[in-house]
Image 1: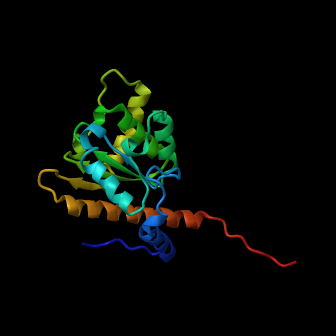
Image 2: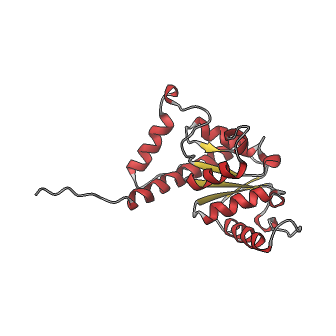
Image 3: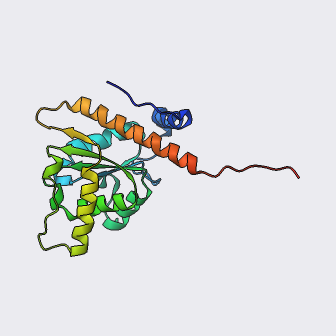
Amino acid sequence: MQRFSSSSPSAARNLCRKILQPRNQIQPHISRRPCDVFINHRGIDTKRTISGLLYDHLSRLRLNPFLDSKNMKPGDRLFDKIDTAIRQCKIGVAVFSPRYCESYFCLHELALIMESRKKVIPIFYDVKPSQLQVKDDGTCTAMELRRFSWALEEAKYTVGLTFDSLNGDWSEFLITATDAVIKNLIEHDEENAKREPICFLQNY
């Protein structure tokens, strides 16, 4: 299977160091540093399957993913914790499942990811993009419906991954998804490095 490469050796090296660092240097399970990858998902659909497996796989590679059931503890304020994680993350992974659009929280998270201009990797899990639609059930304002619909359309027209839970190869998919995450993390670090100001020292 093809692996991703980067034109910036330093960005790739830094990520490799992070992945390969000794286990005795690993930070506590619930890390206080900003997450690298925010996993947007409908918990009841995918927490015990694709989202949970992806979280565990990325965690083993020291990539500091965020999954609400793993990173939050009793007493945390739901929106404060999640909104902060989204704003501070490097990239997002949106796991779309058949009943994803029934969740206000999923759509709010997705909209915030898009509004924060984060790179998003869509994963269509047992669902086609054309099947995803925001429905007006009377619980959202007109502004929220427009916001959610816009975010969903942006994600649907972003190149992503598809997975059929009945016929798909779970191991191969996790490798493919991880490759996509690593590629996008490297690109994120490259773009940030280009924006950093270069300081010149002058002798007087």
